[in-house]
Amino acid sequence: MTRRMFDHLFAEISVAAGIRLPRYALWLEIHSLGWNPDAMTATQAVAFVDSAAPSFLERQGLALAPRAERRLRRMVAQFDPDHPTPYERFEAWGRAR
Image 1 (cartoon, one colour):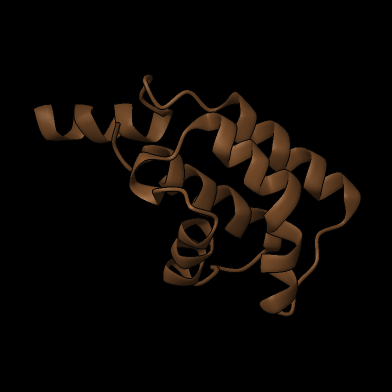
Image 2 (cartoon, one colour; image 1 turned 180 degrees about the vertical axis):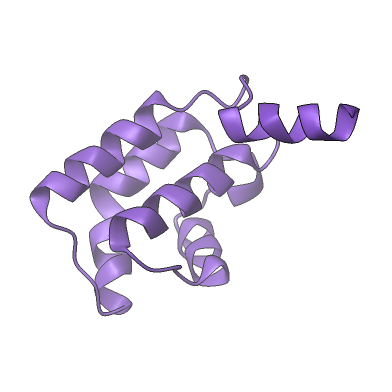
């Protein structure tokens, strides 16, 4: 598996927080849980959102509202790294031209 799940988690948690979070700090946080961010599973990503994301965000001086937490969890849980995102599809179409 590629790093797609980590990339998606990074994007979604940054959107939820309203700022671009430090990517390397997120990578280290996931790695400290004993998971490989480069081969992260959907189950691990959801578990991170449920358990470790609040403390990670707190260390960044941030907190999510309950509604934003629910949205983040839903967006991470629904992501399927086996299917290209709309952005990736458009990017491929652009390269084909």
